[in-house]
Length: 377
Ligand SMILES: Cc1ncc(COP(=O)(O)O)c(C=O)c1O
Image (cartoon, rainbow, N blue to C red; front, side, top):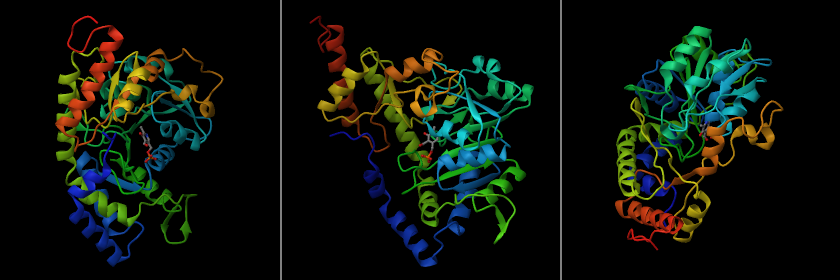
């Protein structure tokens, strides 16, 4: 069996450090926020090149509070992509605003900057690109358009810890950046977690209050807030794991390189790393019109795969808007029917990658009528 991710393998590789960090939190009894969370905020913000980090209890909460800090509310529009995890769009609805979608660039799977301008209206408050799969969005043209129209930019960097755009880490490129530390993420907690990054002190102060019942002083509630605080245990675990993140990212990148070599003559499209990007391969999504047959074949061979994501958000039942229909976002819709995520995690071995690629080759040669040795069947 080749798992899609293997969280246990990673835990065992750093078990002593993690167990010690957890024991320290138990000793200190700082179970909610506390000094480990404060230290992690500083360390992760510094890692990303941002001034302030505010730790929260999930990536979804990070997006919700970033949008609120940017002043988003009922009647406003937030421009984002339909090809993302549903949380990006759910957070927009939490504020009472509505999403306006821009199709993706089929090569990067991220917001197509050439389509952004036409989506901006007087109601637009924020532009919300998603660094999907660990590939940064092409930010310069998006930031340019946002500046010209005086709109704010919030990055959804939930899948892109350590990814770089033109040499700068994502999450600190826009007005606010949001991360998830869900266990399977490149930097994952042992539970839920998230963070907002910003260089703006007012935003940071507002978000700090909003995550903790709108209080700056205990029981003085100046804002209507939320219980979105990060747990002490998660802060301590994430501090340990942050020390290993670059090494893990390099391992993911090496795995991606090997996958690309072995898949090059199979007929599937492997993910591309754009010239401006350091891709961190949270997800390694290949693309083929025979996606479902391939997933089935790999499953029979004991290879776990995933589909990120089978239905674009504008076609999801809960998020259907009368203004949007099937066919409106052809690049997102076609990606949704063709992408297949292969196993990807730092501890994946060469043998495992070879076995996955052998499975892909087997299925693709069946489909093309070519035997695995290259001869016509
Ligand atoms: C692109 C994207 N945005 C937002 C989220 C939400 O993060 P969380 O699950 O931590 O709430 C996720 C992850 O699940 C995600 O992949």
